[in-house]
Length: 109
Length: 120
Image (cartoon, rainbow over all chains, first blue to last red; front, side, top):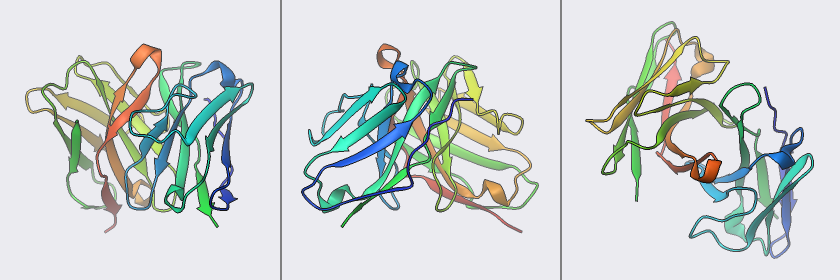
């Protein structure tokens, strides 16, 4: 089955840019979604189809996907961006399954 | 705005069956897939499975032998059953709407989650 790999944690100072990677075999050929989850809350979709944003998501959130790595980028990081971030793909290689990455904890210093 | 709400027992005994229901506030639950996702305490998201109102379904390979998802369109509800539970099934269980716009598969609406503890 397909595996998505994320670093456990990323730290960034307020106002700086945070980049959270998601690794997978030829992930660039797949569509990647990103979810933000704050403590005690359900995940929220922040990026879909590699780089599109749902309505209501600030344009500080962006995404890219190429080769073996997809990345969500958060510009001008704010304290309220501190959360866990999960990447997700649709795996059609063996069967029609959903795959989540292990999640990355974004800490705003 | 689509709203989802999980309900069910918060405590299940080992070897018994976990049973949850998700109620959806929407005109119709047809034309979408309805999914369950869980999150053990302090850990990441784990996809459990999905089912459409027409009966198309699929489950995580690691849970397939113990899981059943069903959809009741008349009640606008869908349900999850997990058989033979152990402590490893302790988790927050989320229900979510799964949609595939333009071939992209994503979860656009989620329930708030319900904690289910497996313990005697």
